[in-house]
Amino acid sequence: MRRKLLWLVMAVAVVMPAFGAPIVNLASASAFGLLGDTISNTGVSVINGYVGVQDSGGTITGFYTPGTTSYGPAGVLAPGNATASAAYADFVTAFNLAFSNITTPTTQPAPDFTSSYLFTGDNVYNTALAISTTTGITLTFDAQNNPNEYFIIRTSGPLTVNGAMTFTLENGAQASNIFWIVGTDATISVGSSGPITFDGDILAGNAFTMSAASGGVNTLAGTINGCVFAGATNSTDSAANTLAGETYVNGCAATGTPEPGSSGLVGLGCLLGILAWRKFRGGARRRTD
Image (cartoon, rainbow, N blue to C red; front, side, top):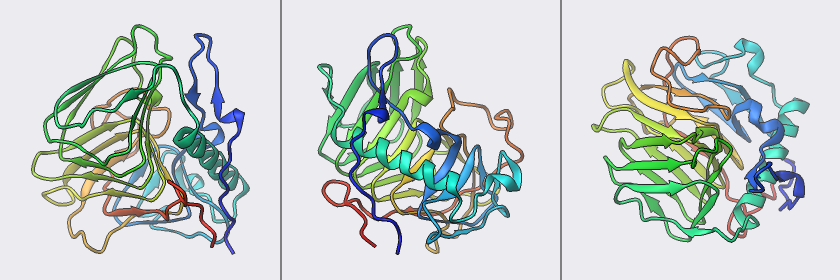
């Protein structure tokens, strides 16, 4: 019996920096690149940070080989590892609070992501609609000369990234302060538009999918400057995908967009497929199995 996920509303999940604005605090989960309930991998995936699952009921396949971590084989924590279980609990706490409880006087409606958009720091951008991006748009994040300013994009529906787009970080903006809080499915689709660089930490309630790169195993699929967490299965393998694309997952502390080969990771990775997570009930359903 896997541990029931509870809706945890804890003050520790939000901290108040010197300038007085709340940010999502991942606590011990920030040391992880991938967290889920079960994790499977196909391809030479490269993860900056630890890889772990919720508890002894989860499974990890495809790590340490062919997938690798920045900590070497020691970066893959076996199911039941206490550090991974604690990190998973910290992720759930942060997700639940960010999904339902963070409100500020500066909460804004999210754009429709069909055209380029400027996000201003210390804002929560909310939408109950699906987010589906248009290929070629530019998302600009302006920290207003304060590198601590946060950006929260929150949807109770799915997030789908449709091909390449540009992230521009201005006036001290950090990728580590961008949080994508997704109530259901998050999908990054790689296609003929070329490699994708995606900035921010992805916290999904149901499923994450990173598609294969068009062109095969020697084609760069993209870079995720952030970590990828969700409520149940975290998988980098999909039977539906037959192509492999080289991809970096740069972890929660990522502050920008590294050039391929300069990220400090060993080798190039390829992520395939589907990171599937069960929904939390009630907007992000509780798991009861």
